[in-house]
Each structure stands twice: as C-alpha cells, then as structure tokens.
Amino acid sequence: MRPLSYLSPATAVKESAIHGRGLFAISAITAGEIVAIKGGRIISREVLKELQPLLGPAEIQIDDNLFISPVTLEEREGSMIFSNHSCDPNIGLRGEITFVAMRDVAAGEELTHDWAMTDDDDSSTECRCAAANCRGVITGKDWQRPELQARYGNFFSAYLLEKMQRMKPEQ
Ligand SMILES: C[S@@+](CC[C@H](N)C(=O)[O-])C[C@H]1O[C@@H](n2cnc3c(N)ncnc32)[C@H](O)[C@@H]1O
Ligand SMILES: [Zn+2]
Image (cartoon, rainbow, N blue to C red; front, top):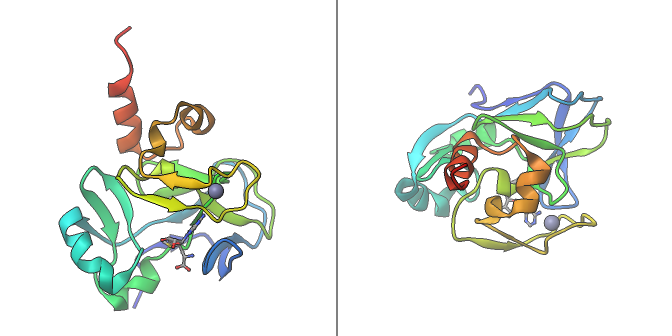
C-alpha cells in the first residue's frame, strides 16, 4: 500500500529518546523546507473517539472537530509522520497538514513540533521532551499562551491562527 503521508527524503524514522519512534533529519534541512505532509482520512471527533482504541494516537487536528487520521490498522503505518512533541521544536505548520523546518536543522537532529501548534482540546499530558524549557505538562489549550504565540509566529495550524485573529481586541 502506498503511504498516505509524505516524509521528505532528508528524514528517517528511528527510535527516539522522547517516545517510541521519532522522525529524524538524516541530512541537513534548510529553514522553510517541507519535512512531512500528513495524509489520511478526514474524520470528526466522534469518529476519532470510536477509532482510538484500535489505532492509538495517529491523528492531527485540522479544525475544531475535524482530524486527519488513518481509519484502519492497515493504513496506520503509512499515515504516521512520527513527529514527537517538544517544548523546543524545530518544525512547525504551514497550513494544516504541512510541516516545515522553522530553522536550519543538522543531520541527526530529531524533528519535533509543539502540540500547541495543532491542538485545541481539554487534554493534558506529562511531557517527556527533556528540553531545557520543557513546560512539564502540555495542555490542549497551550496555543492560547502568549509566549508561545510570540515564539512560533505563523507556525501554528491555519485554523488556530484564525482563532487568534478573532480573539485579538478590536483596534
Ligand atoms: C503520533 S505519536 C508520535 C510517534 C510515536 N513516538 C510512536 O512511536 O508512534 C504521539 C504519541 O507519542 C507520545 N509522545 C510524543 N511526544 C511526547 C512527549 N514530548 N512527551 C510524552 N509523550 C510523547 C505520546 O504517547 C503521544 O500520544
Ligand atoms: Zn516538554
């Protein structure tokens, strides 16, 4: 089966110190370069809940109640992009499914995004990223944190950028 997601030829999936398998640069990647594009089916939160016991975490949120995800075990491997969360990430979103390097990345570095860039939910997770600036606990509302909005600029998912615009006081 052809993979549903795109992983750049400059990347490889390897064991990660953060969790399970992670996505790594195997050659130098330049700021702005596409490292991965998430592929899958577009499903609602209701369908995601039904599928999660079978598939585990394999989805990316793309709108308030919409997710891109595999829907069968057969599709899962080729839909995974294996980017773990880091509180000091080196990749971010361009749109809702395209992950690009936020800075130049050297061969050997793990490619990580911050879940604050994609998620809006009520979850909270103990973080194991081990970055010097680790938040300790990652929540589904971290996208609202002013310091993260300032740090990541436009590297949030487009639906979150739109929410930020709407939350801004009228000028
Ligand atoms: C889409 S998977 C990422 C790939 C995963 N490492 C694997 O081997 O399948 C997301 C899952 O990885 C784990 N994970 C990723 N980053 C993490 C972090 N910084 N702290 C704790 N768990 C993390 C969590 O279990 C999360 O549900
Ligand atoms: Zn962390």
